Length: 334
Ligand code: SF4
Image (cartoon, rainbow, N blue to C red; front, side, top):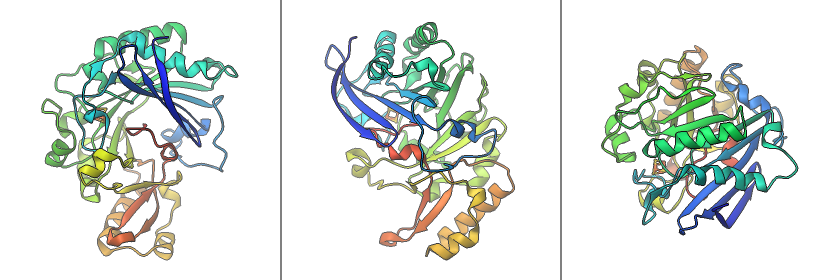
């Protein structure tokens, strides 16, 4: 084991660990779980918690690994990009993160979970360390066959997605449907346009996830989303910001999404929304449009409206997201 634990924080459905490499580079790894039925959010068009029971690691056992220490991309809401130095991790260091988490759980074998999954979503842009990420996936497959690999990218120009197939799934970071705004939030020059992201096709068993960490409702445009991302190929996920020194320094606040519980929008009636919450007219129009589009089943937005408030004169769209119960040290878990 080449990694040393520095500290950790526990949450309702897991733990996030801060680790250091042998040469003193910080990284983080998460150890989480979810009820198994949440796995079927896409196929069953269901994405809600049936009750308060979060299950345990025998259901969906998910390990979120870093592929770099630090990150040169420098997204506006992510502390990782502000670390003073960065380096790529080796495949062995990526696999060691999995071993580190598993060493905390003698009560269960990783492969005994109904689903066991590695999210390449913590520190770093995996496509900037592709050789080692691919090698790590090979090593993990040898040790724990049948692992589901979930690789997240901002979408670098010229990326090869041909290796994303079978039990490997892709997530792309969109964040805004306005190209300029997206450039500002993800300030790396050589990245794919929104239109190019929509043309990605993979051989994965699952749809490609489009992640939107929504800073402002102005970043969401259902027409552009629909015209760029074929709902038969893409799964749309909206995420909250985990406020940190960097996001606050960039005046991003807590974002447009506030995590509470998983609620399916098709089960939230407009009447309930109106009765329970006072909202601005502008926000009401946005919600109505989103709601009606979803009802037409043009696209499943899995994590849906649960409530709206007008706190501090800024209306917020609260969106259910179970994973939000776990606030990582620096960036958003996917
Ligand atoms: S969000 Fe990801 S790509 Fe962006 S700076 Fe953080 S680690 Fe890098």
